[in-house]
Structures are given as structure tokens and as C-alpha cells.
Image 1 (cartoon, rainbow, N blue to C red):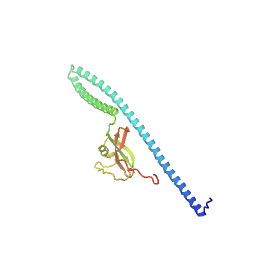
Image 2: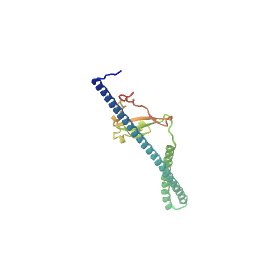
Image 3: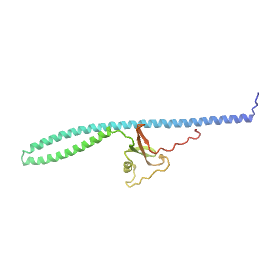
Image 4: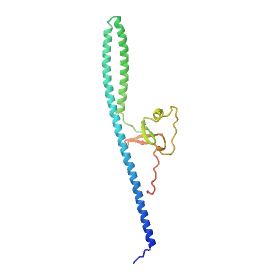
Length: 212
């Protein structure tokens, strides 16, 4: 059977085909945009991982330096203790030197104690692993990560970093996107299943027009 197609119907078919091709191009642009955002996020996360590794390396370096300094201080304490023992059998003139030596010994012992405390904290930071439920607070500046704090209170207390007065009152954010705020705090909690920190309040997913 031969079907006769009128010029008007043919024109409508061509218009439908043009609209279909335009829709394909539109969906392709959306897909390319989504891919670009994904690549950008991957690059940014890789850079953050490298920064974290660099910070850990710096902490280990600081620990080594502190241990070397503590060793030097211990040797100095031994020298001062020896000087004190010798000074006990000297004249009144040496008694003045004894007084100075005792002051120096006290200062050295105090510095040694502070160094030991600092080394202990560094060692705990290096050896500590995140546990389930542990939280971190990320400070966002116009939606971009700025500083990571151990707690929300620490983030609020560090007002100098934000260029705000010490008595600034932080308020809960509304439903606007993070980029709409100059400064915004986001809480993340450690998830052992993923071995990473997840945002406590996930934003509602945006529906892409035309996507099923």
C-alpha cells in the first residue's frame, strides 16, 4: 500500500526531528557539565589528601626536632646537677653561682616538662585513629572549605580567622546553598564503613530538568 504524505505532515515531521536533535544536544551539554564538576571534585579531593599527608609529615618532623631538643635539655640538666654538687663545697662566692645554677636548673626542668608534654601530644596525634561517631567541623567560605576544626565550639571561638568580633553570635543557616553564606559551618561525622567523614545534613538532591 502506498501512503501519501502531505507537505504539511512532512514539515511537522522535520520539526519534530529538529526538536529531538536539540533535546539530544541539551542533554549532552548537561552530561558534559556534570562530568566537568565530577572531575573538578576529584582533583580537589586529591589535593586535600596531598595536603593532609604533608601536614602529617610536618608533624613527624616536629616530633623528631622536639625529641632532639629534649635530649639536649636532659644533658644540660645533668651538667647543672654536677655543677650543684661541686658548688656545695665552695666558698660564699661560689654560693652566688650556686643560686644562679639552681635558677637555671629550675628553668631547664620546666622547659623539659613542657617539651615532654608537647612530644606526648604529637605522638597521640600521630597514633590516634578516628572512631565511629567522631565529628569534625568544616568552615566554609562562600561554599568552599576554609578550615577544619575538632569541634563546632572551636570554629566559633576562632573569630579572628573570620574577621569577625569576638562577641559575634552564630545563627543556624536556612535552606540557601552554602555558597550564599560568607561563612558557614558544616559538621561531618566519621563513618567506619566508608573509612571517611560524612556530612551530617546532606542537601536535598536537585532534579535535572528532563531527567528520569
